[in-house]
Every structure is written in structure tokens, then in C-alpha cells.
Length: 226
Image 1 (tube, rainbow, N blue to C red):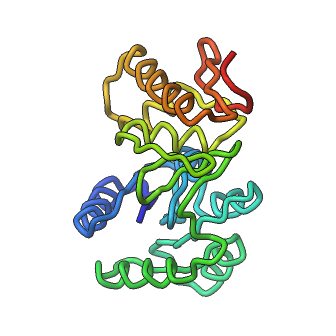
Image 2 (image 1 turned 120 degrees about the vertical axis):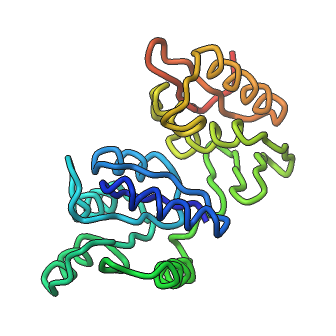
């Protein structure tokens, strides 16, 4: 599973990430509400784990704004609050499940399994835009039956661009999502992987191309390269 943790207690967030990564999952971590909301709307996750009491934007507001933005990612509220009104508010905000701290790792895993069993329309195994299909399990990009395997970084780049098709993705967001928040990455590294992905799109004869938005970032848009 690809999971998002939004938790301002950095020690707890790191501990949760370690538990989940040890179980074979991919984890992104945000330590404030605004960053968490940005991740939730710009990436594709199987579950978002949200603390309630967060700086800049609380978990209730993140969940509500995700739903308003059409983001169907299942939300697990994780908080020290156990009062019934808070649970009701969380569920009414768009959360799918609720856990109170402290909890055992096995309990967290059980909640995650329960959420991902409710797959249906909220489970994403592929991302499709402009006739392209990105397989999130096989790391393959395909069009009209032709497919090509992507490297890890090409896949991460394709994922963020296809999740935001038609929208400009800032270069800082690309660096964060492809290399990690603490990575030191030169502009030419980003440009190199954009070039690699452009070649893959041309190989597939895709009706989409990556547009450079000067001094800002990149955008996947409809139409072939000129």
C-alpha cells in the first residue's frame, strides 16, 4: 500500500512510518496540516492517516477539503481525543475510520486492512489520463496495448504528473515527491528525468506531453510534442 501519515509529533510519525515500511508499505510523512493536504491532493494513496490536532490545518478540515476536492482516498483519523462529539465530527468531515491514541501496531494494521478491503471506487490500481494508463503495481506506462516499464524515479515523476494532469506541478513538489523532502537535488537532475519520461511518451506515441512552465515547474498536457 501507498500510505500518507499527517502527524505533527515527529517521533510518533517516524515510528509509524518505520512500522509500516517494515510491513512492506510505501509511506509519505507530513508534519503539518497544509503540507499534509498538499500531499493528499497531489499524490495517490491507498489510505491517509490524519492526526486531528495539527498546526496550520487540522485533520477535520483536511478530510473535509479532500472530499470537496473530489479526493476519494480513505481517511483514518488518529488522535488522542476519544469524546463522542469529536468522533462524530471526524466522520462527518469525510473520515472513514477513527482510532484513538495510544494504540498497538497490530490494531493500526487491522484498521488499514479493513479500509483497503472497502475498495470499490476508492481503490486506485491505475491512473489514467489523456489515453495513458499508469499501473501503480507493475510500474508500467501504457497506451493502446503498448507498454513500457519505468524506473523508480520515472515512475514517481509520472505518478505526480498524471495525478495532476493539466495542472502545473511546482518543481519543489516534484523534488519532494520523487527524491524526498530532505534530498539535495540540482535542477539538471529534474530536467534529466523529465527528458527520460518524455522519451517514454514518444515511444508510446502518446497524445500527451510534458510542458515546461518556465521558472515554475512542469505540466502534463494533451497533445503531442511539437
